[in-house]
Length: 461
Image (cartoon, rainbow, N blue to C red):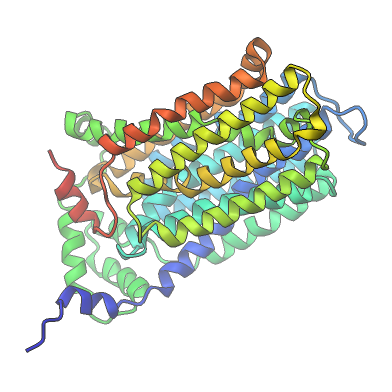
């Protein structure tokens, strides 16, 4: 008599390479978004330097706006994405996001004044907002539960790849040439992703069972997907496309609580100062007075982020999501405390030549900690925690709030820095992150290895 679990036998027969193919194709768009983030560190440093050979010179106020307008554009992108997703599908919305991203590089190539940079950064924010609002939803809907976290984490890590390439290319390429190079993954994405099927959930939402079955077969490579199709139908059952009716349902306490829990996790991510460290990394390294060329340090930090992201991709579906988040938050807090300590030593006149290792270790451990949990897992939870009827509304609310938090974080950095100084800025971020561990322990549900329907059943109050 066999004691094999039928579910395990069925899981062994599922082919996953088409899902990875879709995710890798999507990662080209995410890499383009990462290049837009990675652009900031080298070029903001050059645009404020009196020594760099640049066609423009920006004031600190102008630099602050260039750094933060991308995040304001994300808000517009998130709103546009949410309005379109239910009607044209996740896939077409993601493809739509490639257009403003491509436009942003065209404006960067043509930049002759700070206004062009403002428009370019705002357009890259619109594209990023559109793509990120739909990406985790699309991947969560096409993925087998065994690899859902890995697919989303891998795409979050593609942002780090883009930032690394941006940091590495920036010191050696003109802004014009950087724009031409960055157009390449954008164009490749739009060509290749157009060949990938739409999510089966979108077809079921409109009652097109035949297309849903065909999509599922493409992603699973199985002739018989009836059982999974029935589960998807149960998950989608009752979902409608009226965004205002869905919003009313979203405001019910049990659903609103899920959104606030996920949003709180994103808030901690921004409270860590991650987008500040990304945009101003070369300026921060320069101010820390290390004896190594700042652009080399930033490139090393970017590579370490990629390694940490790859590790998270491998572990996110093997270890508990909560465990990774707690380790990530504590590591981030300690790293920020050490970086603040370095600037304290500089403020009391300590010889900077004896401190070169300290800020590098602090920033390295910061990047490793954030990329290992705080970056990929909130996006994973956003794609997992909501019923079919509320996924779009939840994405709209969370993505819009994220854009506002990111904009506020970027825009307030320079005024806060001028007010209290470097060491207190980083110590403030570090103290905020201390509260993340208990928040995760008590409030974040464990979703590892569960189907979307199982997650809804387990989180229903």
